[in-house]
Image 1 (cartoon, rainbow, N blue to C red):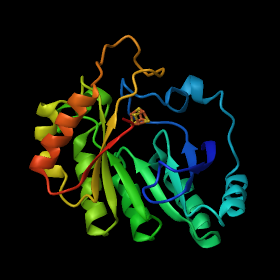
Image 2: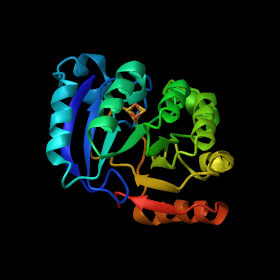
Image 3: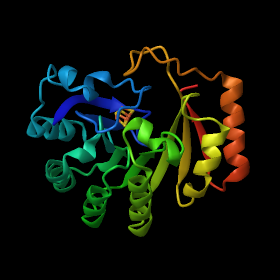
Length: 232
Ligand code: SF4
């Protein structure tokens, strides 16, 4: 389940110095994904598993100078029970706040983690407009359900959008507008085209700083949620 660990990060948990735990495997196939090693089964199988108890030990060693832990992937919610057990140990044995990064495809997992108070902050991705989720092997109905669960359980969450021109333009953002209400912030991330990605043969385009600012302005004009540009 656990395929990577970073001891400290300043950029993965807003307002926190945090450790990052990477879980392998994903049910989506976003052509722009640069977590190739964590997504493709043949690449994933080459990464060794880190025992959860070793990771907990590392977290405890750092608990005097980090204040959070980020669980990311891949898609961490694919490990329903293992993830819950792992978070229970973090909760009971460390003082760290827990952030989960998710594509939102497993609302039942979010429901159970929320009910057990195992989440302090969630970053939920919007990849493209609801009508285009099938292109990524996803279904926006599940994402909508995840949003409802986060709101119902009063979990603080941000919406993350990677600004890939082939999947996010003004048109897609317009379709997504009804779904931002309730988020703490919207993070619009620059697409980093310079890395290896799942579909290198596809030309997905890349936005420059001016276009990113225009997308940000569009969101700001249409939402009452703060919008932040990242990786620029
Ligand atoms: S970008 Fe995220 S959701 Fe998409 S394939 Fe990669 S890990 Fe999965």
